Amino acid sequence: MTPGAYDAVILAGGAARRLGGVDKPALRVGGRALLDRVLDACRGAGRTVVVGPRRPTVRPVRWAREEPPGGGPVAAVDAGVRQTTAPVVLVLSADLPFLTPETVETLLDGIEGTDGVEGTEGAVLIDSDGRQQPLVAAYRAEPLRREIALLATEHGGLGGLPLRLLVSELALARLPHPTASFDCDTWEDITTARARIREHGRVLDEWITAVKAELGIDLDVDTAALLDLARDAAHGVARPAAPLTTFLVGYAAAQKGGGPEALAAATEKAAALAARWAEEQ
Image 1 (cartoon, helix red, strand yellow):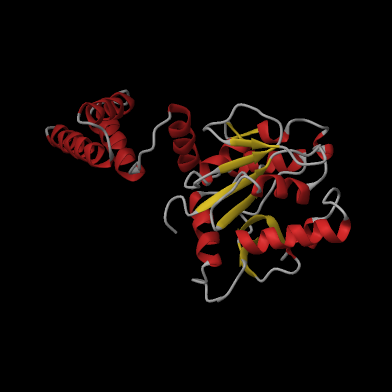
Image 2 (cartoon, one colour; image 1 turned 180 degrees about the vertical axis):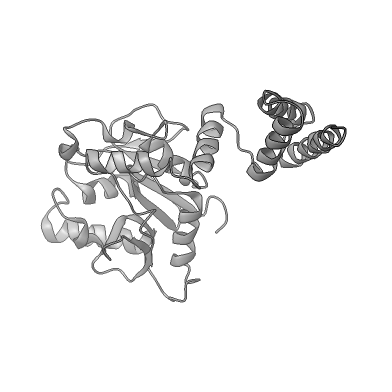
């Protein structure tokens, strides 16, 4: 889907009673607030609307509040959708630590029928128990607005209505994805998420993503090449050469204008030098 072809609505209100009433979207997993992790995953949205109290965020967003205040998820979705204009709306909760841009693309592909389901009005992720998660989903805007209007007419308002009423009449593609649909409702969930991102095979990608977000850079990093360079510098020269070499490679790439090509060229040159250095031993 082309950039800006969808808008995003993120629900960041709620009382978080099972967490003792803390500000759940501000809780950190991997050093980043849960809300910021979700915002990073949907950075391709044309408009991003966060429904909930204003708070610092990693990038600019539009803010909305549900009516009545504390009126529940359907009222919150309505408040967010009112500020969107794109034909597709991504609807997300703010407590999804493992949501990624790739997951968002999966949802957008699902709504377009590329998963083999034609004529869908939305695509929703399925959790590990086989339950659909309507707050990890993409919807066509017009059917979603239609269902909101029908519910408001039928019930005299949207306050307190469960999400299942909103999505029960929509034709949805169901996409199994237990990792991305994992949400944090309890302290046990938070602990699980914090431990999982530190698992072998995940921790480096998580760390690099966090560093890029913290430094405000968007750069594809060839992790394997940089690790190989660090290893060669450490073994072929001296152990402290590893961090110093990778720092100098980054600096040299920045001097050449930055970007993946400049980084790759600097890495290649430094790796060749490390190889020549090691040969002399």
